[in-house]
Every structure is written in structure tokens, then in C-alpha cells.
Image (cartoon, rainbow, N blue to C red; front, side, top):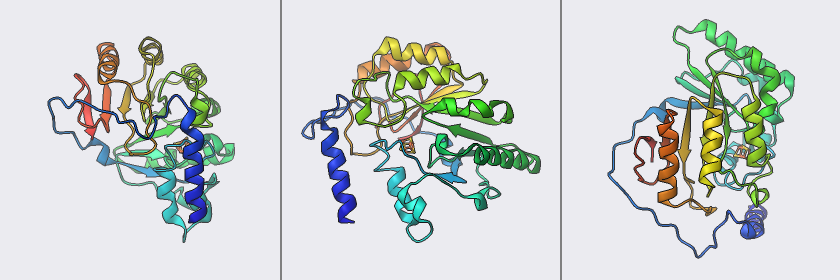
Length: 274
Ligand code: SF4
């Protein structure tokens, strides 16, 4: 336990020099506009993890997915350590929720091709056995890994990538995943009709470049959310910049679904989880 605490402290101190990380004494203030009741759409989603783990080491994952994985100490040490690994016994245990995040506690770019094929086959078989098809989300921060599988995906699979910002400088202190510009290029190049972009946890960005990326990708919609945890404190855009960004995306006809917006009411943005 002491060892993991020291590791967290080391990572925290190591990252203080990134332009995306705030000084610990800094505070971020947000204005709260007209509060609306959020919908519970997100409550209908769940995670299915026939493959679990990741080596991208995003600093915000330590306090979310990786912390949740620590509950698995008595079940699977690879889950506990977040080491990428396959759980074939889970292939047939697809949850009953309407929306399923496939390997939501992982990055599927670390999975072997044979395992990804087995996961896709399990979805296909499941589709045959249910009357109302659910929606499956398949996501990666190295989205070119999905390219060999695109033709095999059934129509109820949406592919996702996360873009927290457009800025590459200092991103190596946030994650070992491909930098945002590379990730954008990879995702844009994928020939697949159903895409979603997750902009979460949002970090400061350049409005023209970042909105241009989203408009070029033309996803079915975007998720937009601030860091849901208190640590690490990320450098976030001002409310004015966030509002202007959301306005461009909404105006282009791309729906924006808000998550963890701390009560900020962005015109035209659906609120799903505060
Ligand atoms: S890519 Fe996803 S699963 Fe991997 S470390 Fe980052 S947040 Fe965690």
C-alpha cells in the first residue's frame, strides 16, 4: 500500500512541469448558469470487460479505472495491476444494458487480434439472440488498431476515441497514448460510418484547431466532460471558451452530450451526468 502511495506521489510531482497541470495552489472557478435536470441516459450503459488493462498510464486513470480495478485483488491479479489480459470466460456474459462499453476498463489496442476477433464474434452471436439490439461502443486511444476489424463490425457497433485537447506539447506528461494530433489523424482516416468522440477529461485547447478536428471527423455526436475527480488538477478552458467551442459544434449539427460539467449550462448541450 505504501509503495503504491509513493508511486502516486512520484507521478504527481513528476507531472508538475506539464502545461496541462495546474499548480496545487491554483483553483478553478466556474460560473453556474440556469440549472436543468440531467437525463439518466448514461445510467442505461454498462461496461463489459472480456479484455481488461492498459499500458497508456493516463494520469487521470490512476484515480478512476485503475482505482476501481484495485477491488479485484481477490479475483484476478492482472485486473488488480491493470495488466492487459483476456478473460474468455466473459465472452458469453454480455450485460443486459441497452448500451455496452466494450472493454471499457482497457484499451483494446493492447489486445491480440485473435482476442478482438473473438469479442466481435461474441457481439454478432449476441445480436442473433436478442429482439432489440443494443449499442456497443468500441474505443481506443490508438484508433488505427481498429482498422483491420472495421469490415467485421456489425452495424450496432460505434467506434470511439478520446480527444481531451488538440495540444501535443506537454501531453507526454498526461499519457503514453499517441499525442492528440496523431490520434485525430488516425481516427479521421478510419473508413467507418459510425464514430463518436469523447472529449473528456477536457483540457485547455485552441478553439479553431480543436473545433475544426471535430467538424472534420463529423461524429454522430460528442461527449463533453470535465475531470470528474479532484486530482489531478488539469488546466481547463475558461467557461467562455468552452461555451464558444460547444456553440460551434452544436451549430454544425453535431449533437453534444454533456457529462461532469459541474453545473455549467452550455446552450444546446444535453446534460446527462453532472
Ligand atoms: S487509455 Fe483509458 S484505460 Fe488506458 S490508461 Fe488511459 S484512461 Fe486508462
